[in-house]
Every structure is written in C-alpha cells, then in structure tokens.
Length: 477
Image 1 (spheres, rainbow, N blue to C red):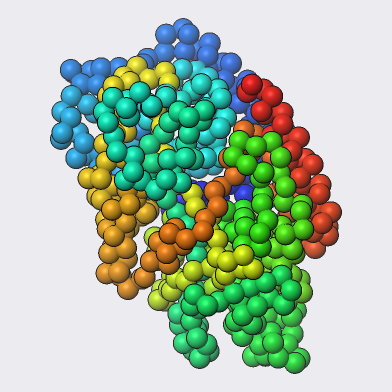
Image 2: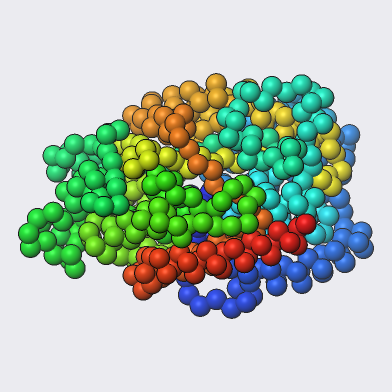
C-alpha cells in the first residue's frame, strides 16, 4: 500500500526515514540535487544518441504516458482512461505509477533528458519551480480556444496553478484537514463525540484540550485531567500532535491569525511572528506540558505513525486530510468519525489544497495530451472518479459522488466539504519551497522534541528558509 500521507504533505517527505544522511542520500532533497545533476547529464547524453520516443505513434495510434504517484488512486483513473480511449480510439494512454519518494526526482531527470511523460500530476510545492523552468505547457490558449467554463471548479484550485496570469494545469482534486477519531473509544468512555463547537486557544487550550485530557489514560486508568495521572506510563493518548505542515501546524497558525509565508510566490517566511509562535507553542505543549500526545521521539519522521496509532487504539483521535480516508478505512476495524478542526481565536481555518494535471512543454503530441487533460478535468470524468471514494473531485457538482460513496459505508465525510466552504488557507507556494522545508523540518523536529525553544526554533527556521527560497527565486529570474 502506498504510504497515504505522501500523496500530499511536504513536511516530512525526505525526512520520514530518519537516520544519518549523506549528501548523496536519495531520501533527502539535497542529496538528490547532487545525484540528480550527474544522472541528468548522463541521461541527456543517452537521449541525444537516439533513445526511443516514449510517445511515438504505433499502429496508427498516438501513445501517451500519464504519470501519477498514488497506487491507491490508479484503479479509479484507469476506469476514467478506459472511457477516454473509447471516445478517442486513436489515442492509447499508459499510466506510469511511481511512488512519491521517487516520483519527483524521476520527473526532473526526465525533464532533463527530454523524456518526460506527456501528462502528469503536479503539486503546488513543485509547481513554481516547474513554471519558472519552462517545462510546463501553457494551457491558457487551449482553454480559451475550447471555451472551457472554469467556474465549475473551486476558485482556489484554479489560482494555485497560475503563474504570471497563465494556466499551467487543470484542477484534479481538492482536500481539507479534519479530525478523524475512533467512535468506539468515545462510546466506551462515555465521552461526547466532537462537534462544531469544539475550540482551542494558546492560553488554556480551550474545550479541545479538555476533551483530549478526558481521552488520555495512563496504565492505571487515570485520565490526564485527574490527580496522580502518570505521564510516563500512558496507555492511550487523546491526540497525535505531529511535526507536519499541511495536516497540522499550517492550520493552527492560520487559526491564531498568523501566516507562514508572506504571499504566494513570496520570498519571506514569517512564522516567527507572535501569532504563529503561539500556535506552534500550543502544539508542542500538547506533548510536553499537557501529555495528551505521544512524545516526538516516537513520531518525528515516522511514516503514517498517527494513522497506525489510531488503528492500534493507542490514540483516540488524529487530524489528517481527505486523501487519507480510504487508507484509514482499510487500516481500521472500528467505526471512524470525522469532525471539523477545533475553532481557533480567529475562527476555523483549514489548509485547502489540490493537485493538477499538467502537460509537458516538450510533449510530441500536444493536442492529444490536451484532449486527455481536458477529459480528466471534465464533469463526466470527475463524477466517475469521485464515485470511487478516493479523492474529492475538482468539479464542484461532482462532490456529492464522493460523499455518497462513503455514506454507503457509514462514514460521514461532509466535515471536509463544510471546511472547504469556510475560511481556508493555501499550501505555501514559492520556488525553492522543498529545500526550505527540509531545513524547517529538521529544526522543527528539535522543537517538537523540546530541545529548542519555539521562538528560537522559528527564528532560525525563518532565516534558513528565507535563504533557500531567495536563492531559488534568483536562479529562476
């Protein structure tokens, strides 16, 4: 099974494996840079010597490649492509599924060797770099020529893949972040399930902290809000507070009135300001001060640790994105509930993110690739994919298909939808974000461990992060 969290959150992608990393460690973005440069140069030599065109026409058909990373979604997209091929008998589409951990390096190498897939999934963390490098096809003239109605999509999705007022991808899906919990635990402990009145604040934690204290139990049966609670011997945690950007701290920073990045395509991280520091301190306090979350020594850089703790009954509740609903349903043998995030001092705010289908600027079959992308973004295809219960479709009118799929399985996913209609914040969009996030994550790991005070950690992370995105922007200009 594909590690479900790797579909989206960039917080801990390269760092999940832990351990000592050399400059050539392929698990680390920085290591890939050196390795990728050498490998890319070799590939350019090989392709210039006459490597076969992976989109060559054979047997009267045009062969397109479609690259994606999530094997959990592949069957749904194969169904959509099967329908596309029926309507376009002159086009054959081959899906190339590459796990997230290798996907981006492979794609960069293919760009360097002029062998990139015709169509591929794109993420906002990589989009700015690709847009500046000129490896993405500008879809604006095609959208205008075919008179596509972009109002059928969430406006946030359209905006995320625009650069200098041009469109470089068509919306594929969307996601928000919610609480997901074990209904059996709430029932057994006679605790009311979370509702939209749940709130938090950085001063006393609000009703959210009180709930987590009730749900946290030591090995003697004492709750975290009771005298003689043994914080060193906890049987069940109420929550899992992770060093994760999209699934965790970006939401809380926004809910406390703070910002992570100054603006889209900005060159300045600002999460060392008071509002952001307070939110991060709250998340760290859930671990070290309130003991309602496992220590970071158990969670830092461990793949899917929150989902596994939920599945094992070691945590009553976690927070994650809608892309993980299918994975969690497969991993658990108890009824799961979904609730909106607790409301913060500035209200409830969720990260709203999504992927796009992009076309390589050097595809040998631009028109056929556009026909595929146009189909994938169409209401028909979006309804088909949404009905598989894998992701929320980008076309607004197809949302009900996703909700109906899970309703039949007694899982109410509408809290994700409710959040999408409310206040949202975008995933950070800026060139060099991945290099910056690697540095930020390493520092935040120490912060969550309690080794560095929050203010000092954010000051250091902002300084190193700004240097990374400033350098990337200069290279792209």
